[in-house]
Image (tube, rainbow, N blue to C red):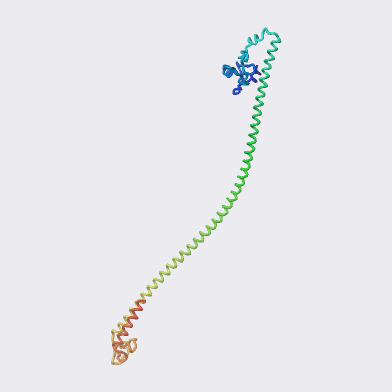
Length: 272
């Protein structure tokens, strides 16, 4: 019975559990656990859940004890003729053989389904593996191209950095030259302005001195000495015609006109 307990399983499609204790046995050689047998065989008409056979006779369904006691085994076939005992035993062995065969068919069916599912999964896996390999190759190519682009960008960056540093050095140098020239130009402009102011002041002083000498010469009459002393006489650097006391070279009107002309020349020199 230990072997039968290990092999016999409930023939209900959704159960397939190992049988123990009480079980329901049908005339069509199927066996069910107590739970599903009680539920299915309480309906009318009674139909086998495994093969859909109609079980109309009273003895088509039997509820039995899978592990009978010793007293029950001693009295179960007692009093029966040997041929009846052998017939009962052969039918019981046929039932057990059918259950084993049925279980083997069920396991083979499950095995075939599992193999088909495994083949499908292998195909899917091979397809996915192929696609992943192609993606991996593409990604490797993209990585290589990106590495090349990165190296190119690094090279360009180094070149641009060097150019920028060179431009910064040139800019610093030019900025220093520009500052030097600007300071030099400012100094030159300041010197020229100071020189211009000095020249203008000098010209103004010279103009005012020239005008003062002219006015002094015009206002101061020549002094003549009767004793003939040359050193005691005042000397004027003028022409005979400009001498206001010399009536031989000009008239008083002519002398006034020449004095106005000299004043205007001195004013123009002072403006310059």
